[in-house]
Image 1 (tube, one colour):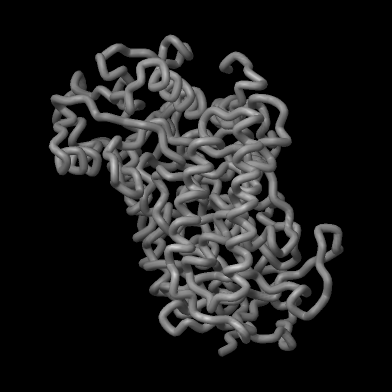
Image 2 (cartoon, rainbow, N blue to C red; image 1 turned 90 degrees about the horizontal axis):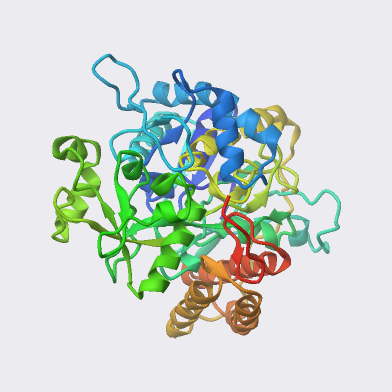
Amino acid sequence: MRKKVDFLVLGSGIAGLSYALKVADYGKVLVIAKGKLDETATRYAQGGIAAVTYNPDNFEKHIRDTIDAGDKLSDDDIVKMTIYEAPERIRELVHWGVRFDRNTDGLYELGREGGHSEKRVLHHKDRTGFEIQQALLNASRMHPNIEVAEGHFSVDIITQHHLGMKVTRRTPEVTCYGAYILNPEQRKVYTVLARCTMLATGGAGNIYSSTTNPLINTGDGVAMLYRAKGAVEKMEFVQFHPTSLYNPGETPSFLITEALRGFGAILRSKKGEAFMENYDKRGSLAPRDIVARAIDNEMKISGDDHVCLDCTHLNKNELINHFPGIYAKCMSINIDITKEMIPVVPAAHYMVGGIRVDEYARTSIQNLFASGETASTGLHGANRLASNSLLESLVFSHRASLKAIEKVRKVKLKEEIPDWDDKGTTLNEEMVLITQSTKELQSIMSNYVGIVRSDLRLKRAFDRLRIIYNETEDLYEKSVLSVEICELRNMINVAYLVIKMAMQRKESRGLHYSIDYPKENR
C-alpha cells in the first residue's frame, strides 16, 4: 500500500501535534503515533512550561538561567530567540484550550524549579503535560486535514538510498521523500510519500534500565536520521532526573517533579540529614546535573539504595492541592507524603543531544525537520534547564511550520520510490534473542554510561555493544519486521552514539561527568 500526503509527522506529542495544527490549513497531514495517540512523553511531563510572564522576572534572567544551567555550551542566539518567543507560544496553547493554574486574582500561578532565579513555570497541578496533550489532541481531531494512524511504527525515512544511489555523510543534498511505516497488526510495511516530513519521535530513555520515559521512547528518530546519514550531535549529554520514585520493579519509574522542590521540599539522606548544601549553595534547587551527581555520590558513600525527599514540613492542604497526582501515587504504595519522606533515586529522563537542527528546525537532510526531544537545537547546551523542553518544542515546531508551509508546494512527490522488500525473511519465533539483548544493552548503559563515567567504563561499554550490534543486524536482515526488533536496533544505534560522543569529550561538562577529567561544580 502507498499513501501520499503533503506533511508527514512522526510523533504525536507536543512537538508533532503543534506542528501538525499549524501546517494543516496548507495541505493533507498524516500523524504517525507509535502507540496510542496520547502515549507520549509530553503526557507525563508534570512540572510545567517555563516562560517570562510577570515582574520581577524578565527575559534577561531567563536567558542567563538557561545558559548557566547549560554549563555555557548553549547557543546564545538560540537561547535568546526561544525565550523571547515564549509568551506568544503560551498564548497559542491557551487558545488551543490549555488551562494553566491561576490564583484568586486571575493571574497565572507560577512555580519555580531548579536553576531558575524566579518563579516562571506555568503549570496545571502536577499534570501539565497531560493537560497540554489533551488540548492538542482535541484540536487535532477537529481539523479535517489531519489524519492519525495509531499503533504504527516508523521504520526508516526514505532518501536517494532507496533508489539505489550510494549515500554517505558527505553526499550533498540528501533528500527525504517520506518514510516506511510498519503496521504491526498486519505485519506489513507501507510506503508513505510526503513533501515535508517532521521527526517528533521523542527521547531514548529506555536505553537505560531505569527511566521515567514511557516504553515507546527508544530513540527512533535519532536512529532513523543517523542511518540516513544525517547529522547528530551532543549525544553524550543524557539528563538523569534526580528524583524518580524509588519503587523497585515499576517500569517506567514514576517521576517526582522538580516543582515539588520548588514548593519547598528538601532532599535528605535516609537518616534525615539534608546534604545538598554540601554540594551547591542553591541546595535542593541546584541544576539537575549537580543534584543527580550529588545523590549518586551520597548513595555510594552510604551504601543506601535511595535518598529521600521531605515534604512533611509543608502545609498539608496546599501540598495535596498542588500535587494531587504525586500524593495519590505515593498513597497507592502506602506512603503519606504529608507524614513520611518520599524515597527517590535518579533515573534516565531526557536526551539533551540529538538530531542537529537550525533555528527553523531544519535537519541536514532536505525536506526533513525535527523538533522536541529528538532534536538538538542548541538551547540546552550541556544540561537542560527544568521546564524548558515543552517550550523548546513549541518554538521550534512553530518555526518549522513556517518553512514547511513556504516550501510544500515547491516539492514534488517522488513517485518512483520502491515499496518495502522483505523477500527472503522469516518470522522470528525466538523473542528471547531480542529481549535478552535489550536487557544486556540497558545493563551496559546503566553500569558504564550513567551519571558518572570513566574512559575505562566507556571503552568496555563500546566493546560489549559491538557484539550486540553485530548479532542484532544479522537477526534484522533475516527477520520479518516487528516493532521489537526495530526498537532494539534503534536503541543500539542511539547507545552507540552516546558512548562514541562521550569517549570523544575529554572533559567533564554538564551532564557528562568523567572521573578522568574531574572539575569543580559550577
